[in-house]
Image (cartoon, rainbow, N blue to C red):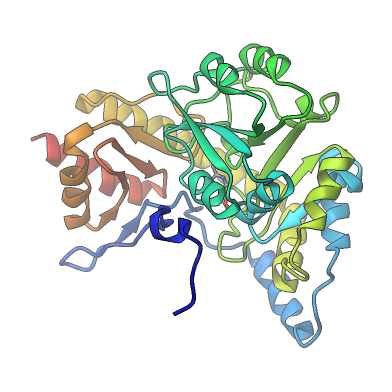
Amino acid sequence: MPRFRQILDTMAAYKPGKAVVAPDGRSYKLSSNESPYDPLPSVVEAIAEGARQIHRYPDAGSVKLTEAIAERFGVPAGHIALGAGSVTVAQQLFETIGDPGAEVVYAWRSFEAYPLLADLAGVTSVQVPLAGEDHDLDAMAEAINDRTRMVFVCNPNNPTGTAIRRAELETFLDRVPDDVLVVLDEAYREYVRDEDVPDGLTLYRDRPNVAVLRTFSKAYGLAGLRVGYVIAAEPVATAVRKTTVPFAVNHLAQVAAIASLEAQDELLERVEHVVKERTRVREALISQGWTVPPTEANFVWLRLGERTPAFAAACAVEGVAVRPFGVEGVRVTIGSPEDNDAFLAAAQAFRD
Ligand SMILES: *Cc1c(COP(=O)(O)O)cnc(C)c1O
């Protein structure tokens, strides 16, 4: 029997959100923060057209997509590195810093991929408990030491939905040593409406140790194609590109992402509908008597403690898939109005 790395026996496996089906066949998948909308016809067309070239390898450098992103955000193409989903880019970031003994600091609870990627990279996780539902940036700054090589800041935070404002984030960044990479994971940036929550792209320009992680999976609706990217100063982006597995971003993902940037106005209109539904869902939950932290993402968080598994099970009976986290709470994606009504009915029934 081959000897495997010991960490494989103990590391947490990533648990993807599951769909559930009610006895009468109804099914509402609110467990993975996906877009509730079908892909845009123009994007499907680009993919269909792209299918004619799949006997060829994709453009290894994703040149056209990189240029489209550079133009969209007004950043140099050299500041962009792409990957097969931003989780893969995050994995590459770990590879760029992962010497033996290295530590990564991040809040907990936060995105469940962080501990997994740290374990895989042989990097030690230093998890700093949330203060209430928010990042405790003071405690995170204090957790940084000589071994710290990277910090993840998930803004807004998955799964609590809370967001860090500019002043506190800038104060934190000022406290981080220059040789520690700070990754601002902005997977939900397009859903942010609080104007005090900074766009990471306004912070990275004069901070060579700040990297902004973005994805086409959520607001852009391309979760099934796997494409994400990091924007950071040239040395960071170059280091990430060095860790790329050749041809990681496939041809269909590249053409679909380009078509999505071209259809951006239409997609952002959809995001606006989700944001309106977010307000409706949160207010309805509060009037049902639940405590719901303010959210800047496409989901809400209910800290249910011991009631978490029972709540998720009660939703499943109604065909509503939510994402339970142990005995901490559930994260519920904002879906279509019909999805959200089904969830609100299940939540009300649980209280009755
Ligand atoms: C969904 C999500 C991602 C995006 O993952 P992809 O690999 O791009 O699909 C990244 N970070 C966070 C915090 C997320 O919730």
